[in-house]
Picture 1 (cartoon, one colour):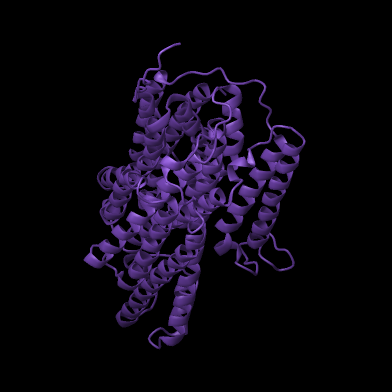
Picture 2 (spheres, rainbow, N blue to C red):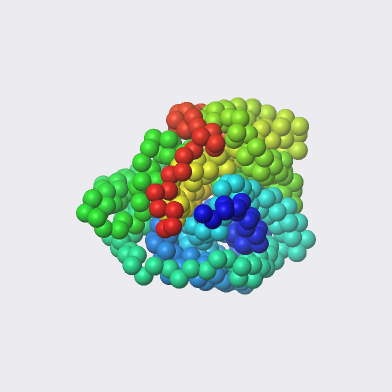
Length: 539
């Protein structure tokens, strides 16, 4: 009888490639909000157009990631991984040489399409290259990678954006892609499985659903929340196309699930194996992931918008303001795995969402025009603790709850959820803030006797977007406004923006509180209690 010997730990060099691949994607996404001021100045566009580029990245990933998982299995994860890493590097080159916002949107579409294969490949390649405790550590490191890339993007990107410009920030994306390509030579290669069949109907359904949902949410402000505005491309009986697209997207999403179940029952290969969502605990993890990522995206869009566009400060100022949050997320995402042996996922999830709710309510009361105050920093730190814990936790719940051969499906579910949440969070934050700002300014104009109707007509103060006080003074200087009226308009603008920001934070707090429901349905088990779920270890 052969003697059983302890398994030799695998090298961490392959994991370095996977870790940096996650950094690559997250750095790219985090660098866009930091660069918002420079892009707006270079191309003379409103900040909402820059948010469209952010949304485009998330849209491409969410729409294509399930298809990407099948492509990875068919051609081989390692081969597909190397190809799309190279394409991601090309997107960085396009960003550096962009001649218009259209170039930026196109570059982010290419990056998103590449990430649609990178995301599921990370989970599949971890499952292929690591086992046991090493696999748990490797999965947890992906959450840390997202956090540390956020820190790096805000700090390095802020410094470069202030000293040199926003374009060199994306040179870092190209450099990281090159390093990942070199390290990927150490990944265990596979030849793929030509027997894998791609469900074209399922891919069309889920892709169309994601596109329509994102377009609908992203254009709620421009096209109208209910009634169509003049900017809407069409109307449905006077109703805005934005909510119509959202409803149709939801219907197509439900159609995808019906189609997938029918295809599985017929014994045919589905686009994604719904077994990864079989239990209430797994579905709760997906719901929790959607909420926390959407809140993070909303905050990461709102704070740079407010600091750079509203206050007219530099990208480096933005990086300093966001540093407490990003550092806390990184540290928490790295250390939270140490608490898994002592606390069940349900306890950690409920506690973390309670933290984010309290932090957002606190911020809505204490935030001022100065982000460096101690109460504001404290609120960002507390929110970062909850967010960092949740991002790593819910991913671990999904990975540990399914067999190894479904790792790619977990990756595709994770990619769809995170990137759809990021796109929706950014889009809804932008639409909500502009809408609330418009209502606040409109009401303030009616109540302010220092601003006569003739002045309002000259500057169109009731058709608003986020502008700095300096920009408002510049516009008012071209009118017949008196110095007193200019001061009154600037004060109204500053007060309305602050009220809008506080309202937005309260709305996020309400969303966080609602998420306590799915968090309370997360598993009660601890890692040592999880059975070996893989019925086919050699698969």
